[in-house]
Amino acid sequence: MDIKDFRHHLHCHPELSFEEHQTAAFISERLSEMGVEYRPIAGTGILARIEGRRGNLERCVVLRADIDALPIKEMTGVDYASQSEGVMHACGHDCHAAMLYGVVKRLQMERDFEGTVLALFQPGEEQFPGGASLVLKDNPFDKYKVAAVIGQHVDADMEVGEIGFCPGKFMASVDDLHFKIKGIGGYANVRSKVKDAVVAAADLILRLNMLNSDVCVVSVGNVEAKGTTNVIPERVTCDGTMRAFSEKLRQRVKDMITNIVEEIEYKHDVEVQLDVREGYPCVENDMQLTYEAMLLSDSLGYQTKDLEMRTTSEDFGYYTQLYPSLFYRLGVGRNVGRAHTATFLPDDKALKIGEEFMYRLALSILNK
Ligand SMILES: [Zn+2]
Ligand SMILES: [Zn+2]
Image (tube, rainbow, N blue to C red; front, side, top):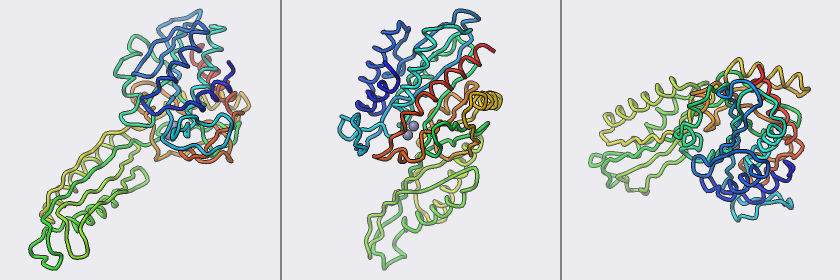
């Protein structure tokens, strides 16, 4: 099967995070056809292994593609549009899986390389706790010396033929913040009798807002206070997100938020319960690996782009915290819509480039 057909099949049959049963079955069938060894991992993921004909087989490169889709009703109108109501490959993970399949196919046919390639079709990127964390709980790379973990993501801010890189810190960590503020509700016109949770929430949000900087984001996007014009509610809830560009800073910002919560409790005489839901760590690219990949991209004739740090997040961050890693972005055309929307449709022409580059990159690392 060619990678375009592979992509179209997945696009037509998208599955939500951690429910990728048919997707995994489809990938398994294709791997079996080629005689590639594989095993399930992290529930609905697949870990395939291809050993080179030479070199130390304990030295490995991990190539990772995520495989999950999103709860979005597709409106692209293409003939391979989603047949699963309300589910869509709107983040390009169908492309990622197809390109990795293409790489595996070539490596398996030739096996003309040193060491081992592990191809990881990873479930659940779009949903906490992230498939990557579940993969690592299984310790699948422990008996290897991991030379690199490589991942790519489609990017609609670049044309086909462009590949974008960011050495070092690339993407932010993410944590969800949930605040529950409890005061004493009552008549809004008898202020002496109430402990105003609404004012405490307002103060809290303003204080959190002051934490924003170039390297850290704190936003509150949901506030619920079910009082009315003349009633102060007993409880107010606020929900938000926190992003940081290093694990150290991430911890420091969390500590600062805890301090702010204590101050708000004291100042407004209310109870504030803070629940931090841990998300993904930062994506930090290995410098040397990134520079070498940029040189390779140049030498293969692609347009090599320097990317800025992004306040978006990826569960690929889990790998980058443990192994030398590289996450780069593949141009799929500027007129293909925005990711995570109903009309997002990466250009098929990018698939060959993503496959070729990942293939060359794996070989260059292994045969070094
Ligand atoms: Zn996404
Ligand atoms: Zn994605």
